[in-house]
Structure formats: structure tokens, C-alpha cells
View 1 (cartoon, rainbow, N blue to C red):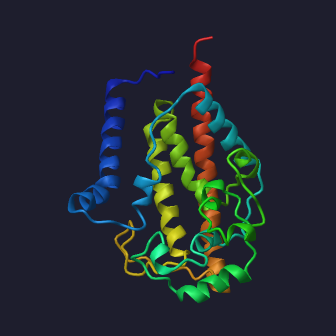
View 2 (view 1 turned 180 degrees about the vertical axis):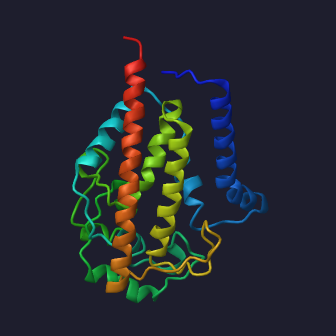
Length: 256
């Protein structure tokens, strides 16, 4: 573990800013939980990413290797978020993960979109949720072992995972980085669901405005998806660099 000595006014100001920002970012979730309300978009950040700090040597080594490799790989902007469509391919309504949400263009047309597009999902934790019928349609066969070789910055799920890795590293990563990674994950999650086959219109996003679908099945939707994807890739890479810098600082300060 490493430490930095800060003057009292500086660390108190940073502590206060972190506490206030974290409170604001989590207020909506805490209030919905108090009322027993579900949110099909944001709840993902609290259930799927139910992370616990684990800054053991093996975890640090793996995260460092994965993030460094992701920075080196060429981003791929041709997936158009079809992983979400492959997760519902040929499912009946009662089998859907978000069964309370209708499919925006119906089941038959959703299946047709999957069948008429090349699918090249590189992210294992998305691919493993493909339906049995959709999995063979993917051009890649990602596994946990091949994740460092396949992860690339244009992948929305890889961008959300920066938050997971920052949280797992615990006190190695400054709080500002953790919350910046959380905000990125939240922003990506909204686009992930807007581009999904589910009809999310009417669901309020983090800004308080209703979410609008991104129809990736048509050219205009594909262009919008890629535009947003490029922005997320840039933000994710900047955060990956900051996490790697924090790891390097911890290694430099560790006892010999």
C-alpha cells in the first residue's frame, strides 16, 4: 500500500467533495430502493457490478495487464450494440431478462435484425449471455482466458468495466477516479439500453429526461451509436491511463 501526505485543508476539501458527489450519484438509487422500485437501466450498476475491493497482488497484476492491453488494441466500431439483441434472440416474452419492457420492434423483427447483421462481440461477459441459438452467430469465441487478447476500447461493456476494476483495486485508486469511472459506466449503460431491442422510451435517465431509443437496425441509428461509442472509448482510455498511473504509484511506493 502507498500513502500521500496532504495538508489538512486539502484532504478535508477532497473528502467533502467526494462525499457530496457520491451522495448525489447514489441518491436516486437509494430512494428507489427505499420505495421498492426497480429501474431496468440503472439497477445494472448495483447488481451486476456488486464489486468488493480486492487489491491482492494477483488482482492488481491482472487489471494492469488487461487495461494496458486494451489501450494497445485497435478499437472496433462495427458491433452496433448487437450483443443486447443476441441476448434475446428467439426468446419467448416470459424468458426476457427485462420482461416488463416490450421489444421495440417486436420479437420476429428483433430476430430478423440478429440474423441479417454480422455479429462480432469481443467481450466475454456480454457473449456469455447470448442465447444458445445466437452464440454460434458470433464471429468470435471470447473466454475469460482470452479477455486480455480481445478487449478493445470501443466495446461499451469494456468501458463500463473500468468502474469494476477501479472498485476492485480499492484504496490504490483515488476516489475521484472511482467516481469518474462510475459516471462513465452510468452514461454507457444508458446508451447500451437505448440501443438494445427493449423499448426504454419513458424511462427517466440520469439527467431526468426520458430516454430515447437508438434504432441501430437503420443507418441513422448506426451512425448515432458509433458517434457515442467513439466518445466513450476516449473517456474510457483516459480513465484506463489514470488507473494504470495509480497502480504504478502503488508499486513504486511498495516496500522492496
